[in-house]
Image 1 (cartoon, rainbow over the protein chains, first blue to last red):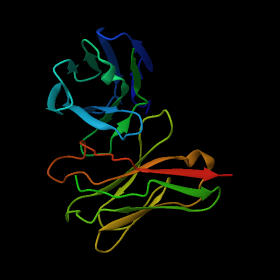
Image 2 (cartoon, one colour):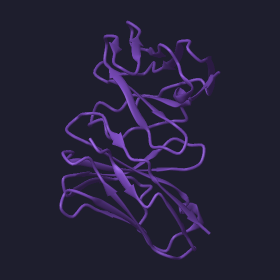
Image 3 (tube, helix red, strand yellow):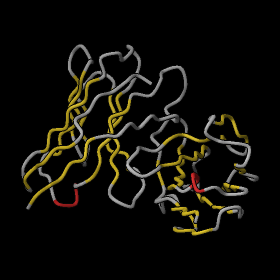
Length: 112
Length: 112
């Protein structure tokens, strides 16, 4: 079990730029999730994939956000035209069936 | 998700048992109680979950009251590395356990 891997760990970008984060789940896990965590708050659900299908998206996921999982393995989360309010920790998790979620250590985004 | 209530913070002496309470008075009959923790700058880590019976694993014990309206997470011999925010979560039974609502959790500080 190599765990859920997220890259990069930190990203600083200027407002208006696009950013992309990558998540590599645990290899045998067919489910993948993205969460967002702002300072002092618990993580909030963004979206969920089962294999390559994106099955649910939160209202938090505005039109500037897009997530993909093209081959049912790794996933990317892209934010277009970043805003200062997008500054947060972006967490990826994976699971198999109804087993508990395993989280990565996140990508911390700072928009200046 | 069923609403959960946890104390904002707790302290514990190193080597002593840490008992973290959680109220979930609106829990439904088939909804599980999950506990995760988050150490600073890391992603959430699954600890334990249960439905009715008390559960124990290598990390902790979970005691659920008979009416299921509250539970207690027990770390039998707390160490400094157990300092973290602990989240008690009751996912909605209508779906899978992926859409976790974390809340603010309890900050447990283990003191030397």
